[in-house]
Length: 143
Image (cartoon, rainbow, N blue to C red; front, side):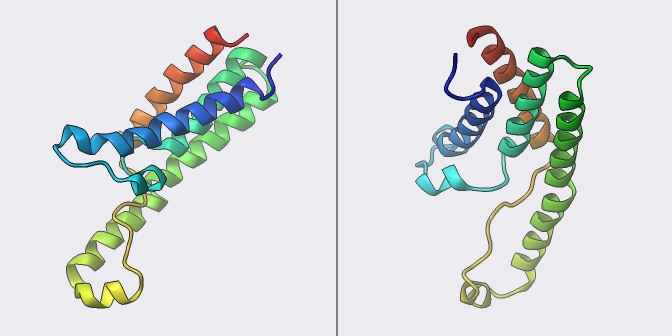
């Protein structure tokens, strides 16, 4: 018996792997990693999408794909993925436009703007792939 539900473990693992990648990715580009990147929103992959999708898939694998729990989770996952691309992705586009049009000294007066907020379709897709991998591993490894 687990102290935590397996689906919650899968979500935590998905977030840790997604955010961990954001931390170590600069090493592959010849840059030093920054601890603040672990808490960064947006970018590759979508950890939010990975977390909810891994819970959804694991719920389907464990409880059945014909349950209300799976249906609820699937709708929730679709909303999270859609918002990551459309709503938060639009905010990222607006931030890029603001950076091009507003002088940097004015932006800094307002505590600056985040470099990323939302996701592209590709970043959400990679989050979904991560979710599938984590969900199946948790399903097979954890009783």
